[in-house]
Picture (cartoon, rainbow, N blue to C red):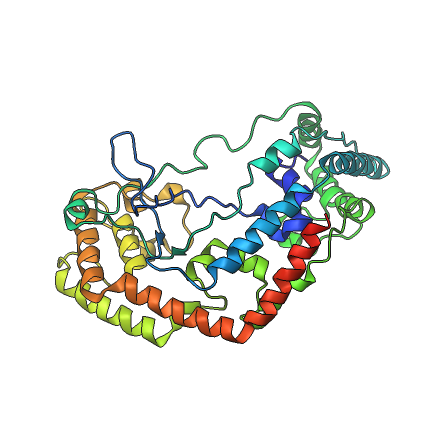
Length: 387
């Protein structure tokens, strides 16, 4: 059973980066340039939409993010890729022997990528304060021309993996040649489960799980000292640093800044303003802040129609929703919604007010936890100095 190259890399880096090694650092939206504009545009010269903006002020947490990011990058650079490659080879041979003992064939799959080369492609969060507010042009004239811009191409468009070959193809062909009952037994022997319902409680004697026990990755350095933020919402500093959504919220904990009474009041002012600018055909039932406004724009087709979720009756595949009802295409109605958003951000001084609340919250958190966090980062830097 073939594992994608990114999963291979996660095996190598997960010890020093935890789950961060397996997160996607690129949200699919271009980053803002230092001037506040977008650095990526379509072939037609239309800006690609982005769901975050640069903060107008420096945030108190940012120096800590940058120190942790630099430290984790150095830890990632210290991984012994030759040793990891040998471990994966032993891991695969163990699975083959284990499966053979249960009456099945399994062909050890060699590492098909250069781990060191792949590691260079795992980018850690770039310095700079991002706020979870959708980008708009700097001027009303540009907003009236471009709106939010258009949705960038989806990174998963086209084939997601290279065609199977070698042992990976042999494994798939072997399984495909088994009867339905034998396929079920094969899956349980290999992975410990056969279907979604049983995946939550896999058989612990599965060859894959036994291989993990017998050929685990190096335990790596003890990073427990990087958890002083546990009392600040039940998350670790590493998770705060790498979780894009949490980073945009800037404050750890469920709901974070969006549950603050000052932001709630700000959003009340904002939605009242939007109501005054809105066209009577817009569906404002779910509009509560700038994020929901870009959601309204992307889900409204040029003719004003929206996907009928109630009629769909539950989960719907994206392919079943018309493109113009789930993406930004630069239509007149999208631009009108963006212009209303632009005017109401100006009227309420939304971005500056939002940032001011964040500065206050982060400052208070650091007053309470700053000394502990400084000690933790000092331990991290001492560990790095001894690598």
